[in-house]
Length: 213
Image 1 (cartoon, helix red, strand yellow):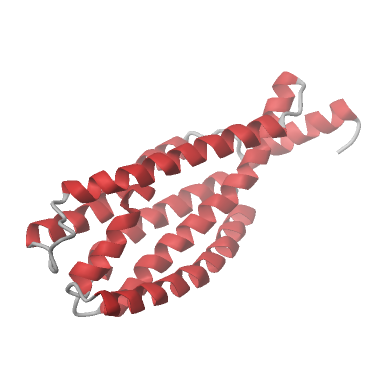
Image 2: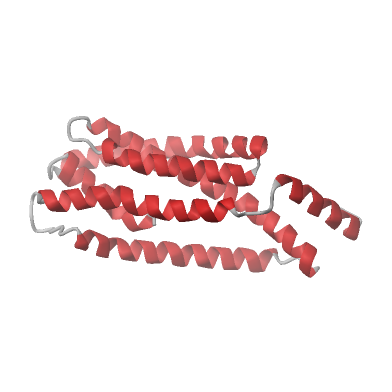
């Protein structure tokens, strides 16, 4: 859902915030990239801190809720009168993205332990391969669909300025599509049953079975 609107942020900057001035938009996109880098690094430390304090599931849910807030904020952050607010748009997306993938990798280790307890096999390779393949397919589908989403807004690359209806749909989809996807993810993560207590129990059982860590 978030990759489906990857193009929209760029075009919102160029045609909505900067009124079609590509040179000015390029400057802002460069600064947005730097803001994303900084906020992404902060997001890693934040997600790790929440996970250590309240558990991985709560950390994932916190990151997803913040992601919803960030994409709601995109409606206000892309503002022709206050173009510097775009830095919060890119920073917010990078913050929640880095936090999510940090916890995702750690949670995968818990899933592997849970699988070993039931199957008696250690299958890190299979889980890593399947997880990587599914993630890449999802990103590929999202990036591929982003062009269709842009076309649906009525965007016309031949025009130096886009119509109000096209700009409105770009802004709506830029916030709305990721919010819908993150709400689905939030529901799924809320049902994730490998809590910290359960993982301590699984770890103890595995160590007793193996006789080693």
